[in-house]
Length: 147
Image 1 (tube, rainbow, N blue to C red):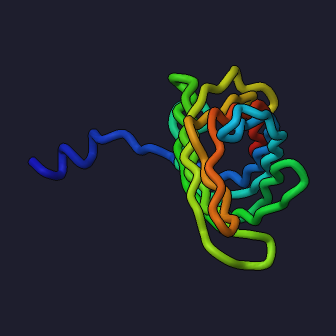
Image 2 (cartoon, helix red, strand yellow; image 1 turned 135 degrees about the vertical axis):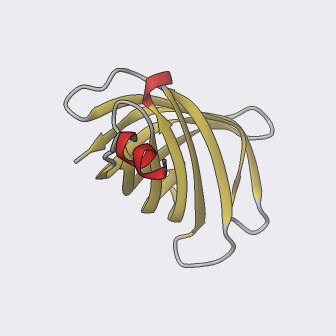
């Protein structure tokens, strides 16, 4: 009986992709003043580009009004069938220091040539400065490219 179940279960092939995500936009400080944000990261994706993919962030940088921070890891999911992306990244100052995490979610567009346009947002983020700086209403737009 078990052999017949195993024999009839379809094989699912999960691919491994390298990806690069670039996005820019704005975030606001406590007084409502806008600040420019540039996000650039690389990582590995596991799964199907058309359906569901697990994302592992390896490294990258975030720049907020000229102050650069290092991305030291993270993870996420891309559910392209529902045009949804979730991303969690860990950030530290350029030359070491406290680590903070950013949790972002958003929507994706249609995939073309292994490039997917996206928007990411978060209600608030914390910059790894001393003292820590809380920023609000992060909105980024960009694309994720798979190879």
